[in-house]
Image (cartoon, rainbow, N blue to C red):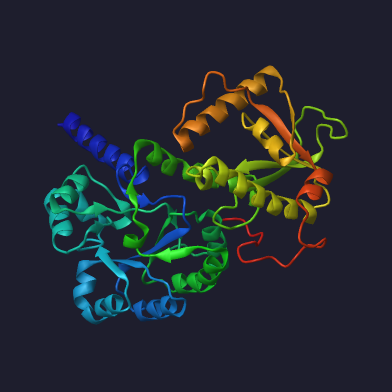
Length: 393
């Protein structure tokens, strides 16, 4: 009996790991090639639905509402208001009580009662039966790749800064119809999103695609990336959809270069891999050139920084932008090469060719960076939308 119970718990745990945490096979984002994004609202309708609809109407934004069956039947007028405004309505199940999902007959009833082409489980929770029931009912499981965290007791300004930091082309954003904090968050973030060039659309307008094992792994690793960025105070150099670099201020770890010894204050460049993963080589070159202008602005604002640098097998290609290259010692070279190969497969689905060169150090001095990519003004400009220095919570 204990063995059977243990196997059942293991099966439930594995299902939640594969299908909720990783999102394997779920519709969690769309193509990263265009700046379309989908705002999705769970748990409604609520007493704040009208205010939420008014805010979306003010900015001409269409969204997708995942409604709970019992709440929708209690307020059909609000459901009709959502539909009248041109928003998409999908299924969030009958109840928002997670314990009921663990009983297969209740989960079936929970998923069966309400119409919808997309179904989003409460909290994203999955059991071993969730995907089977969805298939039998002809529904697609919709998750997300960006949580707004509007359920946390954090200042709306900090939540808005974090959302803009991690918003990417093709993102599906998880929000909630109910918290007052969501309204305050959207009041700040919607005009900034539009200013930056994002186009909020419905799920149908976004046309998301199911996550393959590789894309599911990328989704699962996002939390580690966020923790690294917070711990090391990594800043984005530009918040636009295709601004491709983040910068981490740190002492230059070497090797010693002419006039740039180990320990010199520097920016290490981090590539925004999810923004570049579907770009053609020509598009990547164009966006990298524009993004380096944003990096130069960051450098211009910090007089301590003497160079920017990175370790990659792409170092030779960086010479196109004026970077110089330098060979690495054996162990750092091996680690940088293996790391580059891993990211090449993870984000591009490509295996390094046998003749691909070893990773090298690519660097650009402060003077050369500012000469090639001069900031718009010598002084630090007023931060543009999304350019605040608040660290993601």
